[in-house]
Amino acid sequence: MNLIDTHCHLYLEEFETELNDLIQRAKHYGVDKIFLPAIDSETHERLIALSQKTFSTQNSSLSILPMMGIHPCSVKENFEEELKIVEQYLNSGTKFYAVGEIGLDYHWDLSFKEQQIIAFEKQIEIAIERGLPIVIHSRKSTQDCIDVVKKFNGRVKGIFHCFGGTVEEAKQIIDLGFYLGIGGVVTYKNSCLKEVLQQLSLENLVLETDAPYLTPVPHRGKRNEPSYLKLICESVANAFGKNTEEVSEITSRNALRVFQMN
Image (cartoon, rainbow, N blue to C red):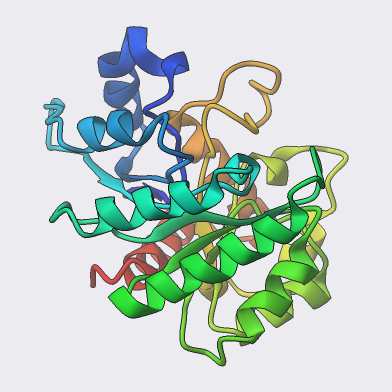
């Protein structure tokens, strides 16, 4: 089984003391690639440094692949300066696989809602200029994120990360040519995500952990990690009545397609 974790903050301090062990566990449970979404300038250097490290596993290597962008929760008074830093990194010669994670977050603080929208649209323009996909954060803002993407008339593709919306929202996202990022929420008993997925197709999904956040059952409440992607794969397989090998194959193929690696 070759799994791809399309969204994992492996460069954060929560992982520093056992990074090698985490990589070994991830590879043991079938994880082949891990994509790192950016947050802001406080962590960009750690993200890039991690993506440039080589981790040897028992049988083969595991690829750690960077994105670049500013997270909506990091959009504050200085967001224009943060956007300039994003562009500097994208022009630096380092290969980035997406502009992300970007988008809107209406959960924590609406003080910079207008600036979030401006930053989101600007980063979509940056992605289009560079021919890159985008990875969207849409917490309590899914329809607004959909409406922003619609403005660009199909000129950008990517992933709605951590999807937990309705069937109608899912269909709008799919019609825009985007994939749904499915993570630990699919394992939660109080989530309706499995029922939503049953009305969709595996061809529209990619898998993610969002580690260290959104840990799947039975580890919920503890720090998440890439090796738990297997649990998410199993839960998705259960929702579709498929085996994990088929889910792994289809979702990994989707991930390679959206990140332009096939």
